[in-house]
Structure formats: structure tokens, C-alpha cells
Image (tube, rainbow, N blue to C red):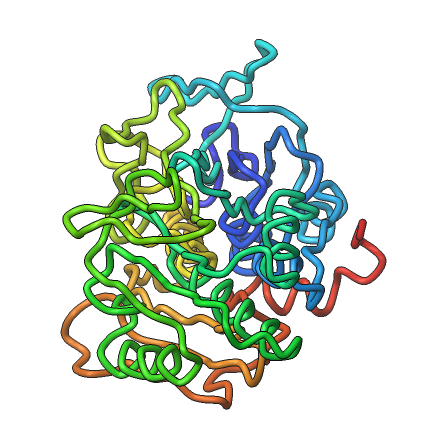
Length: 384
């Protein structure tokens, strides 16, 4: 099969405008551009490069915004400002919030997830530009208004690395200001710090936290913060003057698209939506437990390859073999972290001060297509 039933290019509809959506659009353009027409459908008119947001409250970076229509155009796709609310999988029709109907041959659900408040009483790090509450939190730490500060995250699907960055950047800021009597603690449901990467990374992070004087409490799920105490389960409450927490993550439900109890879409190793024909999903919208841009890009690549192979393109549709890569900003030299998420590869976890892949600390997102695309083609597109 090389075309749709009318002998035209296959119409690929991508619901979303984030990392997974753009990676899928660029991948399809590169490997199946002669056989597909891609429409990127998102209610947002901008793409926010979120990995930089973690250092913005400390004045060390700015979360960049890009014009989504321009980005889509440069990767050979058409942008449509609309929200997909429902899908008729039998007829291959998507329905927008405004009541429009969009026909497709293939659907890629890449609408991301919903970020929700997680710990009552805590300041939530939403990862967006100009977050005044987080800026106020950081200012209070730097001006000695807070003596003991906790950094935490809820259980369930999440991404832990920004929590450690926030704590390390806070310690670096305190050291620069000569404040030595503040106490920082990381409270995490993880069995060990960043244990998703593997043993070597976890041990390196534990040693780094100890070197910086940051306490770590593992195996503790935060419940609420009140009257100077962070209630956690199953441990005793932790004293703190303030708490900064990562948000809770929930799936964005689209009527007609299968999802689990948390709203996430179940997929196979090629990104195909289980129980639905001609439909794929990638990124935070899926039931894959790790919500991270690099993993989202790998999922998008797998989906794009599967579609291209079905259209007769000379490409091998490889199943997802997730490799977790991350750049940890520490306030000093960044650490480059990597490790396989699937078994069968032995001990592959690594942490180093030199990037084992192309790019550097300025490329916190490691994606096969989107990273070089933004580096080479986004000149003049940044809104800020």
C-alpha cells in the first residue's frame, strides 16, 4: 500500500503540538514525505521548549516559545488550530471541539498529558515560562526567608529529573550568596535517586547530593504540606518551611480512543493503539510510565516508521527499545545520564561530564529529528 483509497497521498493527522507531535511530523517528512500529507492539529499556537524552564527561576536560562504554524510548515506539515475531542475509528474521522470533522488515513495521538496539582499546600513546578509562584519561592530561599526547604514529587507516572535539578540549582544559588545555614531535602517515592536510569546513575546522584549537603529521603510519597510539616507515606512527617513539588500527571481523554483508568492510551511496541485500527500514539499521552521528551521522540519515531513501512517505504519498522538520556543541570558542570529502560542489555547506566551523544548541555532534549531541526531551522522563529 502506497496511497490511500482514492490514489492520493495518505493523510496523517497528528493530534498535538508538543515534542512527540513535531518529532512524528519531521520523521514522516524525512522517511515518507512523498507518500504522506501531514496535518498537525493543536489548540495551542506555540511550541514551548520546556526543558529550559527548570533553570528560569534561577536566571540561568529561558524556556523558549516557537510559532507552531511556522515549525509545522518547515517540516512539511500543515498546522490547524483546533482541539481533537473525539474520534470515529471505524470511519476514520476526527471531530474537533468546534464541531468540524477531519478525515484521516492514519491518526497519531500525541496530545500530551494534563498537569494537575499534586501536594496540597506546596508550590507546584509547572515547567512553564514566567511562573511567578516558583520565582517567589526561589527568591524567598535566596533571601533567607526559608531555612528548610523540601523538593518532592507524587507517585505514579512522572519525570523525576527536574526535581533534582531544582534542588541542586537552589544549593548552588545559596552557595554563591554565602548562605550556609539553609537545609535542603529531596523527598521521593523512588527506591533510589533517579533509579530509572540504573545503578551507576543512581549512585552518582546520591554521592552528588551528599557532596552538596542535600538530604535525600527515598521511598516516601508526599501527601500534603501544612503547619511546617510535609506528611508522607509510609514515613513520619518531614519538617519544612516550604515545599516545591512536581505536578501530578493524568492522560488527556479523547472520546473513541482507548485509554486506561488514568486516561493514558495503551500502545504496542510500534506505537499502535491497542484495540483501534489505523491509530498510533506517542509521548506523554501513552500508558508508557516514563514521561520524558526523549522517550516521547523515540515513541514518535517508532510510530512514523510503522506508518512508512505500511505505505511501502524502504524503512525498517523497529519496535521501541527505549534508551533514557538526560542532561542534569547541577549549577556547576552538567551531568549526562543514560540507561536502557528495557531488560536484556546488562548494566548500561552511565553518568559523565562529557556528552556520550551529539550535542551538549544546550540540547537537553535528545531527539533524532527534532533536536537537529530546532538547531538548524528555527532561526527567527523563537517568540522569546
